[in-house]
Length: 152
Image (cartoon, rainbow, N blue to C red):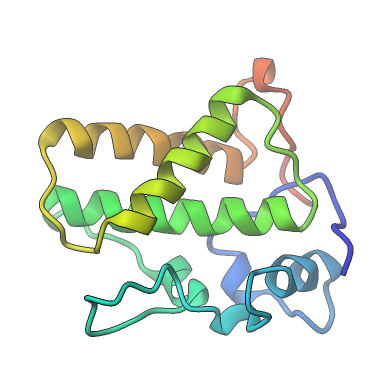
């Protein structure tokens, strides 16, 4: 399946989009590794008792009262999944800064389990990287990024 459009959708759009009726939606989900679409397992780790799908990760919203490390993990996961789907469906990651944030969050999620202990410095760095991906996913990066806008 081909990548379709150089525009972005928010994390809340992806789990509800119709893969049968929307080409951008279909291309994003179908290009995930393993070919399981919305059921693709999110960064499975051998030491975890439970696993979640990409779609489930998009629907988790961390309450403000949640411990900082867990909130940083869930926020990073949500923004990473949306950024990956946006990229797979045709949206560019136009700057080194944005690509570096995407790569760093991918590495973090691949090596850290939800609820793992983190220093406040680690929480701050992960939150900053997730925030950058969030602005990308919502089409709200400053113009110097020359990033894709929201899909219409």
